[in-house]
Length: 320
Image (cartoon, one colour):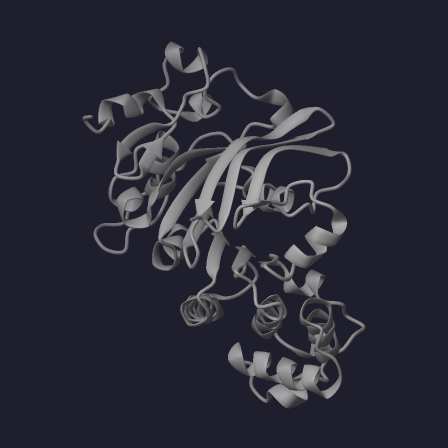
């Protein structure tokens, strides 16, 4: 049974489609990586699923958490889900933490809301969470303000707050964006360790394909509001099928061999109000033909649990 099942999730803002039918399955304890350029819909997918989009957004489809529909659920239900059963870590801890409240106070508030723990027990649990995520001198850090800690330490505080509700799923939205490479590795190691120890599922939204390859079991590649390729991580990196996935991987610098210019994908992600007919990637695709403009391509199976939404993928189809 899936922990989270998303079916035909669509989002529009003022009548302009931004998300165009997303399907996802996340098993208990699984790790899904979502990759793609900025503006492809990775963050919007989870903001929509958790009811965090502004009122002008129109959201349709289905989002089930352990079989229970949560899309457009009553506010009381969503309050129990958000931060409780599903927690989300946002890109910039500096803008997510309240600068005028002590860090311990903010973690204790999460414990009170989601687990009903108050007083000395809450402070003791907050210290335990700080120790769990590797914050040194945890007891003293509880009384610190966000500006007194580094970006990496603040990100650890955000992870501690996310764990306060003992979530079944942790959605990490670019959790290492503002951090240097060494701290990035520490945060990713921490997320992997916590996932194993706590048995929670993980969704990692990232631009870094290397990070996703090391962290996730499955990868969904998004482009212009759709998933265009999805597969087990090993399968996708060994045999990328969609031209967009191939372009993302070709843009990575090689570790060894002679130096050569990177193969950048020309152009940019189309704006939602200026979507081309048919395949949205066709204007940037080196293999595009007139047939690509005729219709939006459906997903085609190209391997075991590996599919791609491209007319060229028909050539890679697995025999029945």
